[in-house]
Amino acid sequence: MAAPPVDQLPLSVPVFQILLSLVDQDLHGYALIQDIEARTDGEVRLTASTLYGAIARLLEGGLLEELDPDPDHERRRCYRLTRGGRRLLEREAERLARATRWAAAKRLLPQTRGARS
Image 1 (spheres, rainbow, N blue to C red):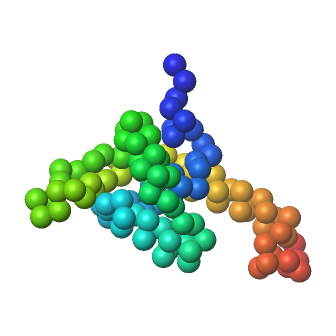
Image 2: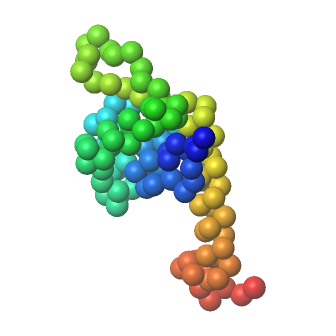
């Protein structure tokens, strides 16, 4: 049986950003959108439909879990990263770090241009 799409690398930008936002805090959907936009200085802006579609796949894949609703805000659904979600995110971060090292070795990045080997 093939792994679900969210359990395969590379992760899409929305999935990577959602998982990254949940590394150190549980968040509801609107807070996820705000966190991602603020953390990326507006470079990544998720629509509600993109966010909730990704969340549905992440929940189905066991990478996120939905928390019991807060009695004061029953309509807000909060999400938490699972161990499996964290492991997948770590694997993706390691993959991206390797890719960055490869680009640096080719002097593609600004801080490596003109550097001597």
